[in-house]
Amino acid sequence: MAKDVPAEAAPRLLQGWRLHGANWMAPRSVFAVRVGGRYAPSDWPAVRDLMARILPPGLEPGQLDATPETLAGAVEALAGLMLAWCGHPAEPVVRTELGATAPDRAIVALGNPEMTSAACVFAVRVLARAVGMPPADTAWIEQATETLLRARADGDLWLKSSRKFIARAAEASGIPWRSLTPATHVLVLGEGRYSRRYDATATWRTSILACSVAGNKRSGNLTLRRAGLPAPLQVRVDSAADVAAALPRLGLPLVLKPLALREMQGMRIVYHADDIEAAFAHSASLEQPVVAETYIPGNEYRVLVLEGEVIAACLRLPVTVTGDGRSTILELVARENLDPRRGDITRGFGLAPIRIEALAERYLAECGRSPSDVPAAGEAVQVHPLPMMRFGGGGRADVTHLIHPENRAMAVAAVAAFDLDIAGIDLRMPDISRSWREVGAGICEVNPQPNLAVHYGFPSPVDVAGIVLDRTYPPSERGLFRHILLVGQGDLGPHVAAIAAAMRSRFGWRVATATPTGIDLDGWTPGERVANLPDAYGLVVEDREMEAAVYAAAPDAVAAAGIGTRRLDLAMAMVDRPTGVWRAVDAAVRAAGTGLRRLPDDPAQSARRAIAILERQIAER
Image 1 (cartoon, rainbow, N blue to C red):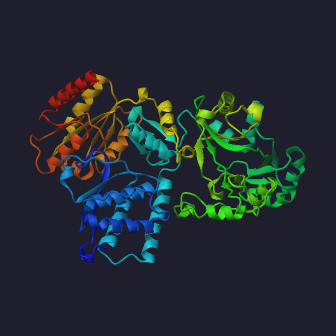
Image 2: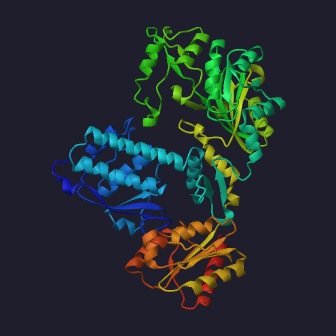
Image 3: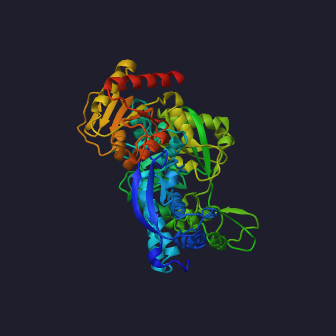
């Protein structure tokens, strides 16, 4: 703690607000905070030390190495760290020329508004505690850690699994995206008529019927077997006695799992007949019908197929320890669990401890081992049959380049059997680089709406979300929605109406209009009044008929909330030289990629000028 900073001069948050779309501070949506109090670069080591106590797994190397020179920079660095730790790293923000003149304001790229604002508030709290308040005690540290954990849980609900990676791919490609109002689990990419909607990895081409068939363990298994593809023998079982009766057909080990659950919920591997009753009780406890099927030995792979082509495959690395010639398997596991990355994953650790529980003991026994065995030096010993994180797994490796051609063909045929456009195949076999016809294999499941997160978090040359986006929403379909903004005091409605009518007449576009008095979606009035330009923008671009929009707003409204869109084709205002609040309007318009032009007094003249400018832009493109 910096001793020369009294508590009353500690960093504090004075004001916070959201700016959507291009705005006077940045060319993208941001959360801005005005901060006060004293801070010096020499305080930064104390901040790093405090964060090391707050984050359960500790800081990754380099995350806070660069020392911010200003209080606003320190807030941005800490808020960015929190967002990244929660799984939603903020995109870098470049300030406008006017925004650069506000050194007391921190700005962070606006993802989820609540999470971003919480990150900024958290950052100021940490700075205040590290710089100008009494040292943080255990209770304060625990409270700060809980704040981070709640934020990460909220982030998982906001953009869960595949949605997060689809959104990142859209961001990287410069495609506007948003959560659909009010169906927030659906992502809208693009604007108006040119937009596309995604429910995780399901697209407008994904068949609900196909998802239903593939998502049911019984119908999925029968579909694969009837197509001549490798899949385990399977029977429906209603009791432990049914499982015992199926042993002559299925053999041991066998697998029990609920009929229509995902991510291995309720699954149990049965190695001995005396395990059947407990295993069935567990699988049946989730109130689903249960199926029993043959166990498929080998490595576990996830193969991603999109539109008739394998685009990625990864190996789930088995849970293993490496012998030293002296230690037992239990001792090797205990040593591996000392890895600082391992801990309670609900508390922020990247890997869970390896667990030698009943299933692991059964597996080791089947392999002729026990937890008290001493493996030879350098010998790798798999200690659990399932490579899942909750058992100590979580490691993955990209094997896309290794897939044997016949295995590729088998994966494509499996997805085609369900008439799915995209699916993830859970495949077990000894070696994916050798033909399944030679070494054997089994398709455990074909997953509709596959989770793309499986293909991230480890070194891989394949950006699966980028590929999914380019194939399902190719650049040729990403048409250009036209945005025109009029800024001024008083009623701009006649200018808005004249420009919109001229655009319809000249280009044949469906044109929306948005003014402080209401929204008109090319003849249909939704009856909603919007509070600001960002709200109007959201309502307009979610309409899949619209191709252009004309907005009108007062200058103080533009300065206070932002433009909504990140790009403008034309902006006109009733002002010649920006001064006062008009400087903020001018900065926002420039951030949106255009300049602020003079709006004529006559609406008809405004329309002629707008059409001339649009015609020139179209010709240049």
